[in-house]
Each structure stands twice: as structure tokens, then as C-alpha cells.
Length: 320
Image (cartoon, rainbow, N blue to C red; front, side, top):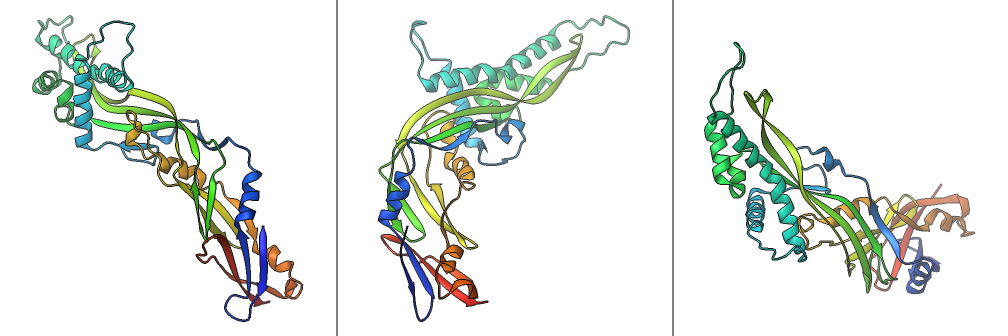
């Protein structure tokens, strides 16, 4: 891997270089396809807090929520001529979300019906109680499209519940000091995106005479996809003490599918890749193997200059 080692008179005392042929040898030892990222457990987002906790979950801003609510409402107008015709992935996603978010409107209707029905106590101390009538009517009359304003608290959250990134083939590496470019590589991405909503539900708590409202998180819809795309990534060379490590970094990973397009999947992938450091050079062992230096010297500093076509390691030593 190390193509040269020189003692120099000033500045950096030792230098080593990893050239293109050494990088090719490293790549040839890797078996493809190679799983780069595998997240199969539910993310912390499934705790469904009201804050944006991490890259796994994104709280959608109000304008985007309004767009989605309109899309859900419009999906109900879609005419599927026959049961044999399968709706496209976008329509299927919106219809499922429409069905689940309509729970709020249906429960408000039931509450209004109970409020308008003759209220005959079945016991002497029985009390009839209901949420605000105007609040209920606004939700019913506004429909799905207006839920953001009529519920006064609706939130939508996009969650990536699992993600797998698989490198299909050996890439080409362009060595350039601390930054190594990757080209001509395909990856397969398997991901599941879920849309959750924080919505109110109206229910009777005692013999349907006492109606209350409670807020809860509901999974509206989900989509799972597996696609092959070009890999947009690079490799960073990091110094950690005497060891140089290589770390993959995905620059961009977006999937144009329902709810997944809302999530920057590269953030999720990189959160796992940052723990997968590959040691490529041990400066301590390098110094120990130089007879004139041996144990009388230690490492003062290590730097990686920008040198096209190779990774150069400059080492300054100090007497110990």
C-alpha cells in the first residue's frame, strides 16, 4: 500500500503515499454486492414525540401538510373502473391515508349526532357533556382538506422505519488527498416510509352521554420500495491519533416516492456509516519500521495534503 517513504530535511520529516494501484488492490479484496447500510429496527420516531428528534423523522411544515390533505381528498375522486385495475403507488398511498385520517371527521359526526339527539337521562345524576359544538361542526364541514385549520393542532410526520443500501458493483476511485471520489457505481436502495398524523378523536366515555376529545398519533399510510440508482458518494480520510481511517459519505440519497421524498435518506445512511471506519494506515507502525528513527522518536503531527492521484501522508516527528 505504501509506495514510498522518505526522510526529508525540513518541514514534515517523513512522508508516505498510497497510490492508485494500492487502492485497486484494496477494492479487489471486497466482495460485491456489499451491504453498506442496514437499519431494520423501528426508529426512535415511533415513540411519536412532537419534536423532530433525528434524521429518521421529519415534521412536515404547514404548507406541505395542506398539499397532502388536498391530495388525500382528491384521491377519493379517483375512479377505479374495475377491481382488476391496480391504482398507482401515489393513489394507493393517498387513499389509505384518507381512510385513516377521516377517523377524526367520522368521530366528530358521531359526537354531533349524539348532541342533537333527545337527551333523556337514564339515572337521576346523569350529566350530558360534549366538546364545543362549533369546533365539531367546523371539522365536519371543512372536510379533510381543512383539517389543519379546523382541528387547531394537526401534525403530519414522515418516518423512515427501515433502510438498506447495497453497493452492487466495484466502483472507480479517484484519489485526491483527504477526499476520494467514487464513480461508476450502482446501489440498490430498499426503504419503507411511513406517514403519521397527530389527530383528535371524539368518543363517549360513559354510556355515550359524556363525550370527550383525545389526541393520538395514527399511522396514516406507508410505502416500501426497492430501486437501483447511481451512487452519489465519496470517501473521507480521517486522522484519529496515529491511525488513518477511511469513511464513506453519501452525498445525496432521495427517492421520488410518496413520503420518502420528504426524508433526506442520506442523513440516515451517514449516521450509520460514520461508525464504519476502515483503518488504512498506521503511522505508529510506520515510524517503528524506520531503523534510524525506531523508538527514539514519536509522532508530533500528521497531515494529508491535497495531492491529485494519490493519498500523501506527511508526518512530523519529535524526539522522545
